[in-house]
Image 1 (cartoon, rainbow, N blue to C red):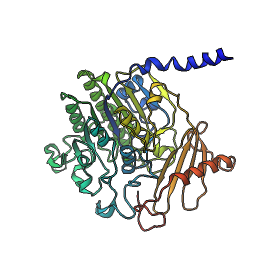
Image 2: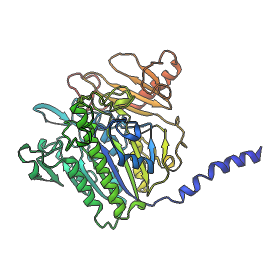
Image 3: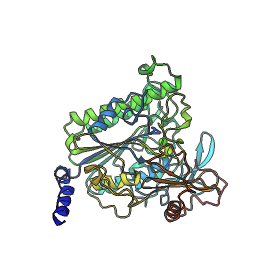
Image 4: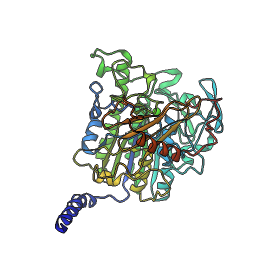
Length: 459
Ligand SMILES: [Ca+2]
């Protein structure tokens, strides 16, 4: 019996050792975030229409997570959970707009209140900065709202180039204005609304220029593309013009392929500058595919139910790829994970402790895929529709959704039912009760989103 036990232990230890030996001390971290890219939008996640050869190559060189989630179903709160490691039950930012609090301003002529990260909301960038990293953000920030003091360079980034909420002319795919640090500048090619230079190309050029610098310290480069968020202003639909697709599907596919080509340029630059072995490359989307794209033939979220703004899988489950150093054989992990884990992982990579965070480091899972206990913790989301609160929790293969406003909870087993078609709440009252207790445990009230206040909207 002892021999058997020893043999078993030996079996557990052996595959871990050679991978551990390759561990990189304070690697460069390149984090690429897509905007509204759906779970089914990449070839490596099952797309039959959209061409994504570079991201598929990245998937083949690293680890592809099948059960990865954004921290929220829309931009600002999702990015907040990524940057601070706190799930939406603890986070400062729990919606794109606040019910009260935040800072007032206008969106498309409508008065709104937007939340922002406060000085006390420590980001992974500021923690890495304190531990010897040079930190760069390229393109989209979206956690400052109308708060001038929440600029990326006040929240942990040494350098920033891109767009800010306060300047509508800096938004979208053909911005007329862009920011270099605090300083706005005119994009001559797009003057007067011209479609001269695409934000995806600007973002790639800026990221590549940073990679090509001579770095005498490890760096964090966060590249947050606008694509494929609406409006569907693609640079060229040439790749898809011969296909029998509606115009909006062609434009959407072209936006994704343009993003893919850009990731290819970043991968090539990492190769050319000789830093691949000291660099961890991460790709993820900030939330699920959006119904605003109005696609006909392309199912952005593959088999998943729901879309951006929903707590069903289509709103939150996203593609997630990690290449550690120059990569290894393709691996797939079904470990359920989300943005707070990515925060913890980035800090682990940078040698920073993350005791107060809601996530766990994925490094053990990256070194040995499918080795972590899937039921040792739960993932949690909450959001605020026009009235009340919606919540969801995932534990192991189970997912519970509380739609709010006195609607009955829904329980799904994602292992057998990825499309969330069969509500098992009545069939499994014990599991339902257990997951309901997680909902109560995870939610801490926020002054900015009072549950009883129905006067404003948050989406
Ligand atoms: Ca988004």
